[in-house]
Image 1 (cartoon, rainbow over the protein chains, first blue to last red):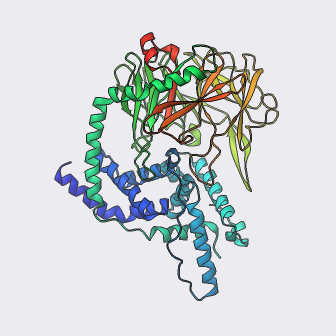
Image 2 (image 1 turned 180 degrees about the vertical axis):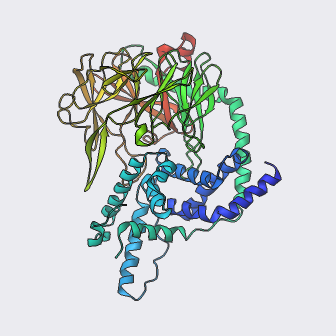
Image 3 (image 1 turned 90 degrees about the horizontal axis):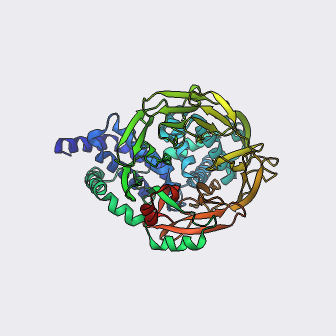
Length: 173
Length: 391
């Protein structure tokens, strides 16, 4: 790669790196794993930079999702990531409940299978449509729907404290 | 109090906000990208030597001589394999397959997403593009003699690996896309012409643990060639124009896993308690049930295999099923428990005697773990090559 292209690549990373690392963090739940995931995707992007046709950020995102959802193909065992420290508790009673639920939810998210977590990240963090999620993950919209239902059901199973009247009435749009 | 999707959204947003772009990541990616380009060039040049050394191991031959459950002399060979990176969640999926050149018994490195079983003469196989490619609708016909790929743009991406006809002229695959594309595409690999077969699928209630959803039968994924001019999608036979021309005799409510090579029946999995000779539907949490049928659709034998252990510690591991790989003589077959199912330095596959279900393990391929594998009956190879690479 020539120097002007290298500069172009560095500018791309400077512009989009923040968005990409946040997606990587949501996918992996672990800062070091997120950095590894992003660097691997950027390496692939750099290797093909001259031949990329289209949005390089979309390419990097696809590479990260693909690497994450095919994690089961590796001999890597999933790690449950304990939180480094407990969040400070606010005074208000409702906020305490909300914090506890959020902490329970974060731990439950890290126990989901990678593909299910990827569907949740795409649909709820990135706000992608079912069709766009399907295109990103390389599956059908029907698969996205079923994975989403299973992921939410699994979350309720792992963290029963998330159950309440509101949750049982929730609808997936 | 918020609904669960809102809680998930908030939690993921909080989590994502804790990350920061590491210093110097662009320069590290540039350096690693340049190294990867150099490595790829070297790999292509040295592929034959590397791959041949990988597949032919005296250890494998000795072990399978003792363990073959099928007819005497039944052997198989590796047609194509793909190694996982083994580097954990951050590693880039390695796009290189190693595909057999049947004339030399050596293997070439090929950049592809998936690789099919070969045509009858082993000359051609179907390859698909990488998941990360811009156009995932392309499929290619790979020539095992020259290493060249002729690419076609198909109507939609493939759900699973396309299958090539015995004469190497056509490819068939289930399309993944909008509802109007539901069905199978048959691509003429000489002219590029595509015929679409619309497949009627009936809904089947599925789910469990408080979750219900609708699945469909027949499931997408498989299309088997009966001969050069007919293919079967489960129990229905179609010609190249997409016309229904017959039915396969199968037990009621059974899912066809593989056709017997002589056309006399197949390997099936029962879907209901009444299917395939009153076997439990699909097995249990710990087992998978199979049956062998004859040309009239009658069950001639049945057996139960243990499910392989999950390759990861994921709590939601979807109970993997042993993958059928190839027939091994008249009474045997190869199954693959899947990547990561065995600890140790080799990739292992199992032989199963279809009369009794007796299962033995072959420790076959050394080196980095294999995460995808295509095998063939070795009797399709010339004598000298068969001697060198059959197991």
